[in-house]
Length: 189
Image (cartoon, rainbow, N blue to C red; front, top):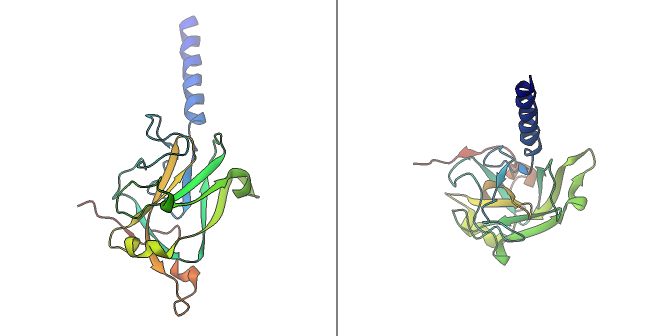
């Protein structure tokens, strides 16, 4: 009988650990490479404000999102487990690989969780960023650049993005920007 109780207790602890370790961060718009919200870097590759070359899933996987430069773009994400310092960093590399996220020119913004939380649900966040026109040439394709969300702790979410110009002669920006909907998928060949 004691053995059965011990097994049940261990199963309950394991279940609690699994439940408590999900939901760290995941991009919603633009769509992330994966819906896996537990991409972490406990190996030391990301600590403090440094997470230069980690996205979890390999470059070449997941949907490609099209975003317009020079106009405010709303980025949405969720985080069910928040970590000190309760901040999120967004970086856009200007190369077709996972890397360069720590470069000062690639950091788009660092957002305090309290400033980005959505009123209807404390697990969902959003912020507006303007993607620099200077990134257009490097990120216009055919292969996408990478947008990285990093919680300044250990967890990341990345999205593949192609950039387009938003000019006054084009369709409205909402029609140009296809945030959250895959435009195409990348070939791994």
